[in-house]
Amino acid sequence: MKRSGLLASVLIAGLCAMNTETEAFPVSGAAWSEAQWEQHCKNVKTTYNQASPFATKELTLKPDDPRFLDFLYWVWANKIIEHQVEQVGGTEWTGPTNGVIFHWAPGSRWETHTVVPFEHAIHHIADEHNWRDNMFKEFFEKFGPVTGVNIKQRLSFEKPPTWVQFLAHVGGAESPYYRYVFHQESVIDPEKRIVTLFGGQGVIFQYTFDRYLTEIKEVVTDCKAYQFFELYDRYGKGFASQSGWAGQAVPHQ
Image (cartoon, rainbow, N blue to C red; front, side, top):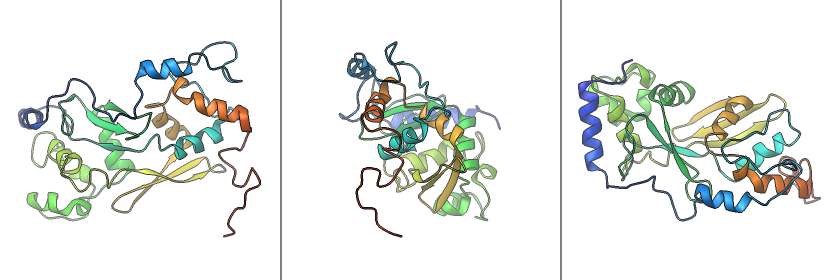
């Protein structure tokens, strides 16, 4: 699949021209900047960072750390990796066109954008989400029969329907899919080390813990998890992952 082509370039330019000029990634007032995160975490000491400040550029927590399972539940509870894709060039702002823009954790302290290479984004939405053309019938029927095939079989970078057109359809400001296909966690299985996620259009898929951690690292650093480490020290193992740990009533199934 070719990344560039005359048609794709024209479409990208057209989409960017329609966007409102913005100099930086637009996020809500709730989001903390990198400088704000560093200011908040710089003097915090926990059992995880006794000898040095929290890392501000990476997440160093490993799956074999006893804190790890609680960390996954803490990420879920804070909705940190919930995200949606935007149209190429940004939705209602002028952004990068060299990949697909992912908008993470809207309305939270962790809110941010990242730019994902086209190949990775296509794998994510076509292979992991397993999106089909009949899930977006009103878009694909303009280009031929809708047969229930994976969208990767219908889209290209040069010949319509293109990936740029499709991302504008699902990620544009007026799209009914913009928030609806937003995916989020539904179950964490510690025994199988699997996280089940769901999204709009009946999508359900699974990540291994390692794959889930890769996604978390798009947003979270040690510094941005400083409150987790404080809570873990305060309450101990199981505080986020075990129901009823504090003696509160748990509904019987």
